[in-house]
Image (cartoon, rainbow over all chains, first blue to last red):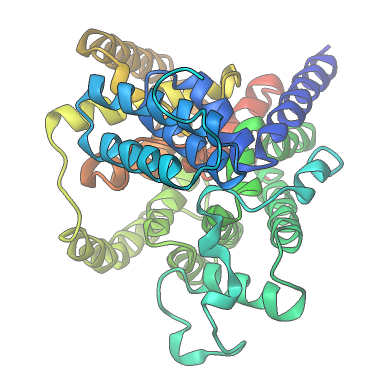
Length: 105
Length: 307
């Protein structure tokens, strides 16, 4: 019986580990999962925005940067808020897409 | 380790840039810099780059191999304390638990693997009565990262837990005397860090309790947790729960639970007292998982005996 329980526990660990490893494929996957778990924290949203911007997904990056800025304002997190606004400015200046302004496209 | 095979193809993530071996050019046998903190961690990055290549696949393969090595060392140590079946289960838990992913898949946190290796070697030596080599190995955990010095305090906890006949009163006195200058050195270094306030201590301890709870229910794991969202009421409730659990364990003599509490407390003490970093992450539990795995396995296979 104990052997069965041990095998079940180890099997569950293996399944959870295998599933969790999918989040470690890239920065984007990692911070997307973090943004779900820590949905009220600005840092995961900001880091996801950075990862998306590196991939030139400027529209999504801008959306997440705006979310990060809102969350930072809620938390009075001046550092994260500053970085979020900096990123938004950078995307607005460098993105070829017309859909990265604060207004919906 | 087929479970971890998919992670070998991933990119460098988050803080892995620090693992770029080309950024820390170091002679393979740089004796002059051997004894500085993090030497072994940084050297492993440089060696991987020099002997293999600088990409994420090589770095993650080395980390995975190191994780397997720690599993073998844990088996060698645990089988002297619990039954063979429990030792096997402990190793399985240690290698396969989802909380271990962060220390293994994120190359930047290889320092945790190095600290665990040094600690396991120290435990292996201590179990055989080789206390001077054990002390040197525990001290060698600093070659992984500076906080690894807490390994010096973890070895006597282990020896006391399983009532090692090697841990005589004389050995205890000599160990404490030798630990004193080490702790003075750590305190000296601590002047560069911020001292904690009662609020940060409470918040960090509560975060540690929540992180430890993820050992039992490893779902919604994340590279970052949002302890800032916790209310003082929730933090106070978690602390009361922790105190009640410890008091119950003490009264009933639940030695595995006390071992786990002591290991986690000592391992995380620098972060609780000196506010190192912001928040707690999964990889901080890589060393405490050594005790958690053995304690968990000993609950499942409860007969303990000293070899």
